Length: 575
Image (cartoon, rainbow, N blue to C red; front, side, top):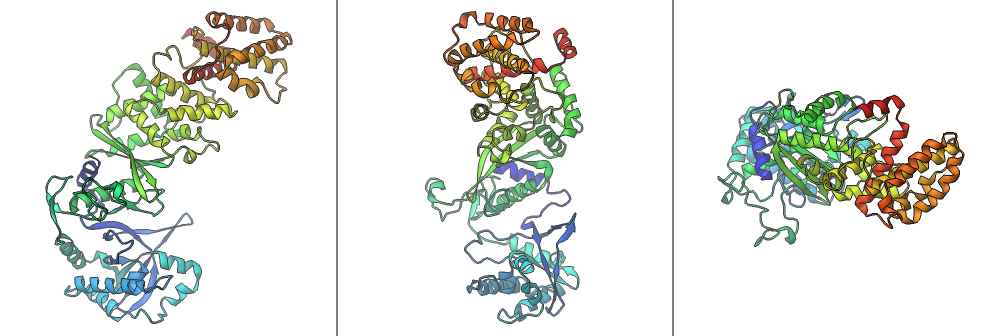
């Protein structure tokens, strides 16, 4: 299903500007060999451009690189590295000369009978190049370490009389003719369902984070990954050349286009709509990962969603099928975390439902009203870096968001761990806990609202509120001149084992309240909360993980209520 959807993406965009034809690929090059018609190398042209003081590689439409070059010697046509073009490498081990001879044979075979000045110049270059000689054109580059590093690691293309060889129509026809005529075992392709030539090695995918730069999506790296009856040396799957080229080209293109992928922790989320689905992909980019400038637009959609109105987005077809593919680098391989297909409308509604689950009382100076997934991930880490999150968590979180399924409990436990470690219970942590409780435990979490619910009498929630009152009283009694509060010393134990902690806190509160001018208000509030616990006194010995979440939400709600201005409290009460 994944390969079929990606192959269809290639065919849907085949007629658009900049589409890649069969047998070609968009590849970058660093140098161009400036040849005359006799194949004499006059200069090496540096192709990188400077943009905002940064070097940017030029990308060209070039014949695709043959698969499986890690061990085998397989030259590429019209674009290759210094081993194949010059017979040179940093480590002269004899292999570089073999690479040059293979490239020479390929170009002479394909271009020897082509009637074109460009073709004749390239053939003569290979025929006359002496791999053992010192060449004055290359000497200045190799003399400096910086340029030498670029020389040995970059790719080279040919330029004859100021024109790139890959732009010559006669050379393009020569490559297309050979590429189409490639023989091999004929099979019924599993992707397209039509007869095609079996491809033994699939093209590589340039996925961020892969240690080897680019690796195949479909491959057999060891016998344990092979299908039944297959061996490591056998083709990875019954996929034809055209389908393999289509899905590889489509996926690489999606990974280069900003509106079609997002990094989330260590995972990469790739998304696209069926033919004509560019508006939906662009909309998903800012809805799924909102920036500050997207807050107003998202608020308008959320308002419609909350009222139950029909959702509308500019130029978007809500019924269009939409795809999400989550990929993760894994020791030189690509792991598929999940693949999800749904109508764009359902995926949109699930995203909006996720934001509604996260809604919780907050201060006016919060940066994000709608929390992006990367902010949620970063809250689970010590350094608040999303990239440090648990390896599988990013994909699990995104899958739960777009599908409307339960949130990963790994996320919930990670937040509880950070709180137990003494971190502040901020808006993000409280929102995550609230969202998990509402979606994963809908019956048990009834009554948990955006802000303080004074009518909710669930024991864990009330205990959290009571702890907030006791901490607030302690702070007020010391006029804020405290280096640490009861939260720093007792919160974790009160949350997990209230039976052994709250008696101590209530005794301390008697002395704290006695120091206050308005002690009556806090004494009354403390009494009201204790009255709600009539059936739970003595206090519960222990709270389970779900109850601890309610405790934290109750604590956060009560603290936010204390910080809310009187005017806002009255407006909320009237609502």
